[in-house]
Image 1 (tube, rainbow, N blue to C red):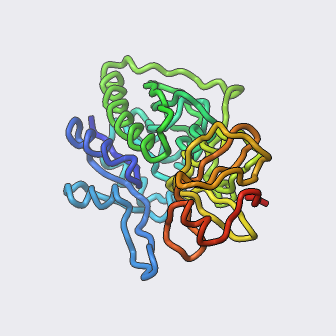
Image 2: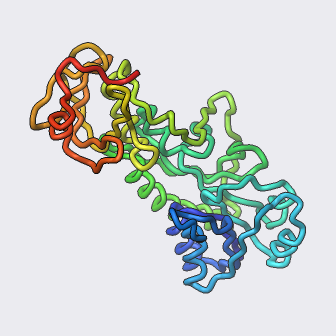
Image 3: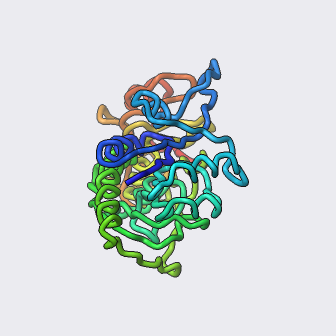
Length: 308
């Protein structure tokens, strides 16, 4: 099939490879280069970089709405279908209508649950045991289109947003190839979503990183797993921010937010239920360090309180 891929981050790299190996990948569309780091040097999205390496035609339009020159490019390609995978921009209806079979989106959740920009993180944060890939027909709304294929995936107890991202990226690349085969055969289902069951997964904010010690230890641990890539979990102690890089659940109990033990294993903090053992932390302007060393160096004591 003649296909265009609209994608930007690493989530879509395996999809790009699968499409390029199994179909006529006519075009890759990615977001514009952005300034990165202290030097603010322009850097292309990773999908754009890979398209250049493979010699695939690349477009990086600044805007899509009423971009008639870009619409003409898509029209001239005579596409069977276009694929989106974490492209990062809302597509106007005028663009969605151009390919013969419209646009199919690779979404990292079991729709209608977790519509939005951060489905992987919110799935873990909310303690879900299962997720998957939904191949959906793209509409102008936010992840509201009919679901055309679903592949489910169990979430392991030690999965975090990084490991689950990689698993779903791999699964998504296989799911879209399966969906395209069925589309060619005229056998790809078209199942409307039940909006009454919809939940949302908005973009993460820095304040989402704040540990809520009144929650159960499992909920605190889920937040840590979900936000391990960004913005990372953190808490306050003596009005200073403490980032948490490694933790595990403890069966100890005490008053929520209070340090109840300090030993070579780390610093144990009570939650609303059970406790959390802080193993690796980072004080402001300092490198990561074992929590036990941090407690000794900063004169942290049993009974001290974490959080607001």
